[in-house]
Structures are given as C-alpha cells and as structure tokens.
Length: 138
Image 1 (tube, rainbow, N blue to C red):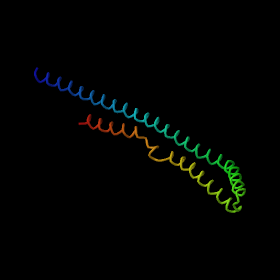
Image 2: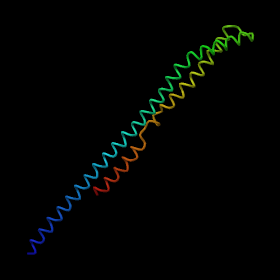
Image 3: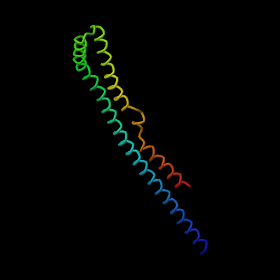
Image 4: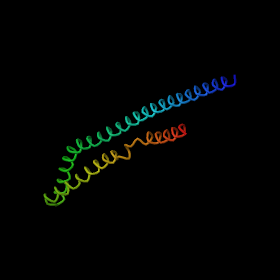
C-alpha cells in the first residue's frame, strides 16, 4: 500500500509540475504577444514622427522658394537703392536665402535623428521580460 501511495503522489507531482510548466509557457506567450503589440504601437508612433518631420522638410522646401525669390528681389532692390552695386546686392540676397534654407533643413533633419526614432519603451520592456523569463526558468 505504501508503494502505491508513493506512485500516486509521484504522478500527482508530475502533473503539478507539467501544469506549472504549461502555465509558465502560456504566460510567456501572452507576455511575448504583449511585447509585440507594444512594439507595433511604438513603431507606429515613430513612423508618424518621421512623417511629420518629412512634411516639415517638404513644406519648407516648397514654400521657401517663392518666398525667398520675392524677398531676395526686395532685398536686392533695397540694397541697390542704398547705393550698392547690383552684383553685391544680389550676392548678399543669396547668402541670406542660403542661411534661411539651412535653418529649415536643419530643423527637419534634427527631427529625423535616430535617437528620436529608437523604440526605447519596447527595448526597456524586452529587457525586463528577459530577466523575468530567466527568473522563471531558474
């Protein structure tokens, strides 16, 4: 009778271990799915950030041309009226245009910085999950 009791207890222990292992794997699968969902959401935000930054660059590139042409003509005319020679006035106007265009492009490129696009939250959460899974396995 003692041997049969030990066998039953061993079988129950094996079922308990297999149930715990199954539960742990199920929880890991849920955790992994949650991380995938988090990564998708964060990636979507980063794509939106890129889209907004590119729209600033495109908007700056499109709008700066007619605006600068008119402003450059006005600046050149004002410099000529002030007694400057036409080539010097035109060169000064071109330098002003280059500075404004450089500022617009710098703003757009800064918004495309790779550090701003890195999915920090997903990486942090994956590190935590890795540590959790290591703790479960031990």
